[in-house]
Image (cartoon, rainbow, N blue to C red; front, side, top):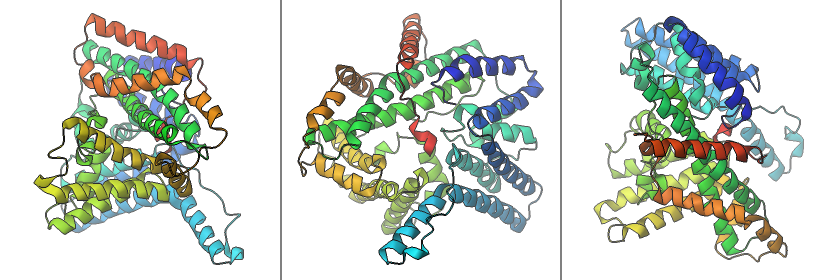
Length: 469
């Protein structure tokens, strides 16, 4: 079930809000947990059992750590949680990748009989990366004594399964909302801002991400593109993934506000960044902060000399790429960002950006991000290299190029492409726009939402990219 669907908008959400607000305070978390499990299990009920298992393991180990000061027992409980969480995640996310690479290696060695061609395939549960990282953050924080132990199982299950951010984030750490789990206010001001957040997020998704996604799909599935068409396609993909994910985050934040929860900002105009370092201070903030606090700093951060710092940056981004999916393309994407983060750190005050005008810094950063997006979007490594060759004029455009251009330069797509750029670089963020809701802003939100609803009736293309992560 996706937020930008009639099923969610006109059935699930009204019923969920009605039941939530009709429940007495002591039953609100039970109601919200039940609704979240229905939301999550709508496509595949078996996924609910896996999330329930993950929740029970981490809740139990959290209680063990909270019941003793014995460092060995606490360390053992932490290790149990982390090992089980990562093992489950690795099995579902990387099993197929391992089998495919093993088969390719056997084929290259000429021993096809050793391949597992008939081996079973694993279906990736929706949102497993998000709720696993979220649940792991709780047990790590309890071990570090940065968070209190949750004694009520339903409260913890509600935190892990909360449907607004369950399947595609943002990654909400327990210590960020621990006080809100205990007590939170429900006000008309919060609810109204939440509705505005949701409406604008819906507009981003349906009116900007989906049309740009169609352009990207056509260009990335074409064998030979002209240089201009290839750049047009990858920029369209950059727009798509930003509006798709930030739109989802806006809707998640909005739904949270409707339920009385205040979630942190997840995007901060990342394409306005003047360096790759700044980009990661603005893009997918919940993941960036998670990797920093639970991976980069424990590895030593920047405390063990410059060389170790560069290695840590590269390693964290490689693992961040692998978190996104089981593919060499994601590793290369992470490697590009990690390598460039290390390069910028090594530059220090003598950064190559230092004497450039601000607009050039933004353009150069966006260029690097676009190169990396090619690997993120392409289905295979050969496809990525082929697309890069097209971007730099190293291939000849096929005779079918005129047909492709007829599809991607449709006036509707061009208008949406230009509008996406204007929104990114000229208009305020949703976070700032909804901070003070004046009558004109309310009317604007309603207009965007109504147009998005109308557009939904004509769109068969409506995926959320981060559902597969």
